Length: 305
Ligand SMILES: [Zn+2]
Image 1 (tube, rainbow, N blue to C red):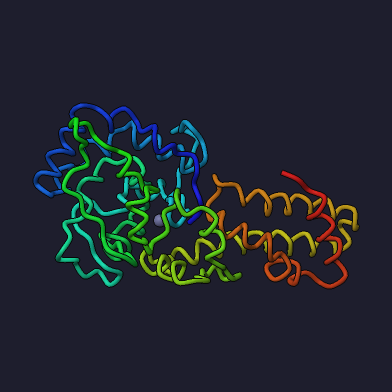
Image 2: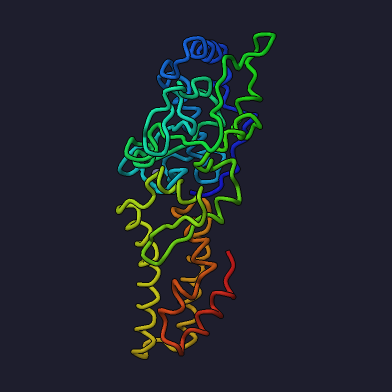
């Protein structure tokens, strides 16, 4: 998970503000039934393409080149599974962290087509074994009878994910577009690709999204192992005398550029990359023989991206 700030909540795709969509919201509100949306609006091509572009920090997606990623786990999964439009606040049912229904709440049916409530998620993060309809809160869950104002116009202000009303619920799960720097300071990783929460919201967000699942941990570890493998290969050529210190420094710089570039938001697992850049020694430098560590640190400090 990482902080996304590309989306402008007040400028939704036109499909989500169309007359037909507002009528659908009114119907969902009158019936208190978020299942009425059935993807008609929130899965429109215009909406999906915007979310895909934003997932890699762009305004427009190039479907032939770009690789969108999950807003929650940061996996690029289009090769094996289609990313899904996910309702941060579930539209038809509300469950606590254990997956038990809140019998007193019909879900956030009035947010079924709300732009600030939509994120892109992989089937693993979005599925029932992970997030599903879970949305635990620390305070009283918000209910609404009508998001329409006195003139029968749709009142989006109270529906925004960063509105005072919705934040008063004290959501447990981080919102990738609302919780900002709190996300960055709430997780750590180790060199085995494992993720750990540093506070209650971090720990529970990991639990809700099942971010400790084995295939995901292995995928994160592969990024670290790939970098270590390159470091070891160049060290071996140095020890064999095929390259000298100048050559080793050159190759270290290429690797360090990759380490720094992995923090870019279009890269998979960029939050982990932020963490291993801060903790370079424990992830990489300490794996290098003592006599070459200073060379590696110099190379790291000399590259920019
Ligand atoms: Zn995911």
